[in-house]
Image 1: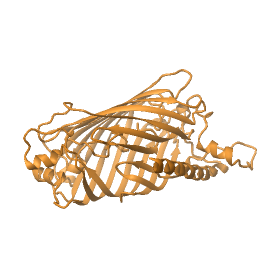
Image 2: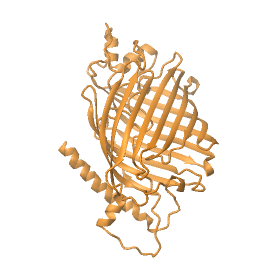
Image 3: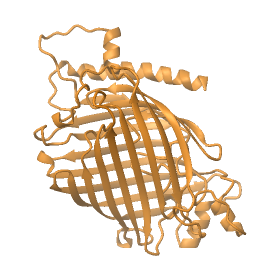
Image 4: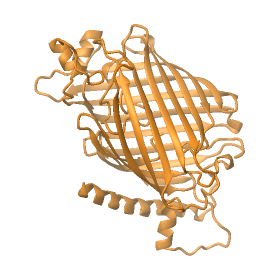
Amino acid sequence: MLNRFFAFIVFLLVTTTLYAQADSLSNTQDTLHTISRADTIRGDQDAYDIVDAYRSIFPRKDTADVPKRRSGVAYLPNVNYNPSIGAQIGAKMVAGHVFGDRENTTMSVFATALSATTRGIIVGYFNHDIYTTENKWNLKGNINIARMVGLDYGLGIGRPLPSPTPDELILNNPERSRFTYNYNVYNFNERLYKQLLPGMFVGAGVFFELKRGISVNNEEDISPNRIYSEWNGFDDTQNNNNGLMLNFQYMTRDNPNNAYKGIYADVVLRSNQTWMGSQHSAYQLVTDFRKYWNLSKDESNHVLAFWSLGSFKLGNDYLPYLDLPGTGKDAYARSGRGYTFGYFKGLSFYYTELEYRFPILENRFLSGVVFANAQTANDQMGTKLFRYWQPAGGAGLRVLFNKTTRTNLCIDYAMGRFGQRGFFLGLNEAF
């Protein structure tokens, strides 16, 4: 515990220095606008963030009489910690730009990073979320290449089966024994949305998710992945998860990094296609709903936030084992605080969370959260979705990292069942 605390202090100092160096780019007038005027909430620009803290300690002399806009490009340390990946260090570049009138056009965001973790994971990615003038079109996508070391705890929600066979006992894994897989990941996905009404979009896309060199680190060379793959006709050493997407999105939230009010809803029909390289055709309906209530007229960052995330199997065909929905398998791997990544998984999976966010300091430099979540999954051995639930909860501290984009440094401690607990460190809110 003490070592982690000191590690956080060192990280905070390094982050302050590096971010202040990135902020010095604002000595020249930058053409990037990091947030639309419509997204600005009263009090945000009067808040006190890490850059302000750095400048108060190391004031600089301005060489011009006119105020300078902060740069929309930031070079950041890509630092993270959670029980699944261990400690992560790397470099990240984040940029924002408004391609139109800031009154009616949402900020477009670009990010790229390269990082490594103490568990031997190496990840590189490029993400983009682009809105054209007046939000007429929205283009989302990412490229991701990684060397993964993944933890696995079996299929289902951790409930013992009555009279299981030897294979079912390994796959169900009621004792939650840990299996470790090594594999390479090559992912690409792209979605194009057309605005129908303000905040409402429909679209389509493609995805290619390749895993190669899958191996398990245990003496018996037997694993839930191997048993599931034998049952359902998959190659347990490699698989392709490729197909098409149909999308519906509705969005009224005021900021993607840290919303104070509004709604975000995304419904995706994913269709694995054999003609695109998938080993089997399969259909999955993925839903993501988030709602934010502002609780105070005086404090815009006093918020109650709700998250509902689901992935539901349609039809009789199956996904590859490592592509099954589960804990932390949302787009940014932020769900399920209190458990390691993939701790629960199923043919279908549902997750819900409620978080209370409150200010601590009047200048917004420090704020806090408390949260509770629950998840449920089915399996191939008779357990039904929504029948059993696994809860978790915790609390966290927020340090205002960038007041212009409302980016927080998030430090959470969460606890679940089966002795699962740990610190979760990252930039931006979990949802």
